[in-house]
Image 1 (cartoon, helix red, strand yellow):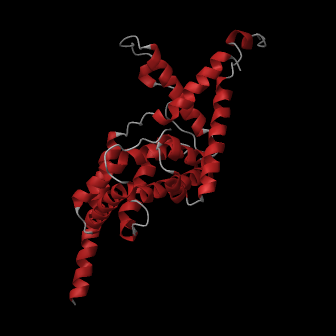
Image 2 (spheres, each protein chain N blue to C red; image 1 turned 90 degrees about the vertical axis):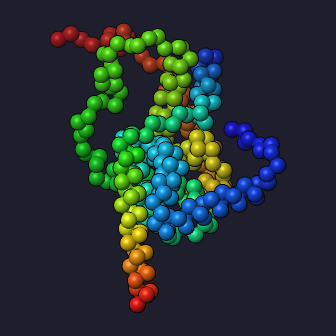
Image 3 (spheres, each protein chain N blue to C red; image 1 turned 60 degrees about the vertical axis):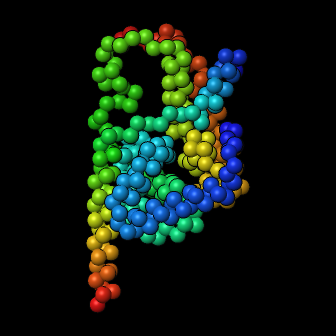
Length: 223
Length: 56
């Protein structure tokens, strides 16, 4: 992804300073129990954190619960925020760790549970409701591409997935990712490269032509 | 891998940075605001208690 150059005369330091001041002001108001600051924090971060968490947990349907846990931790520990990183980096780190904890807890306790909801690929009423109109080919293709990408991402090693989502979807800088994941810059770069490679392999696997339904029936013997 | 498949992969790889935002369930937004209000009150109570301790 090409980094966008800022054309107007603001130096990178000015910009970082402005963000820091904004962060510090918001944190000060949060610590002072200013309710408007709590709402402002939610407005800034609820959508990106929900998206991040849905992509990092293996079960996006639990994204709402994990997002709530993230904000509970943010509200309760905002007093310990020292401004060594940006507020965004600090909140993203909490979200990554919470997603990791959720995956571990799911593997430990909930693997045996049977869901009573609709099957994942079922659209419910949308399956039989009338289509309001023909959808353009490009929209359909993009939608399919996105579904394939989400599927391929969800099947990846969680460590590679986290690095790839933060870099290629969230567009964060390498050093911010290193801070969020609490790993070295070299490890970040290596995980991104290996993640992209893994994603490519997954996509290739999903694009392999499967057996034709007619051919599959050949082996079935009527009883 | 045939030509079409190669082009399709390229298209998918290019779409990664443009993945659409998932729509957040409206009830989550409500839950988060209730949580924020509750935590804010707790924070205010904590600050009040601290001020009283300091006043003693």
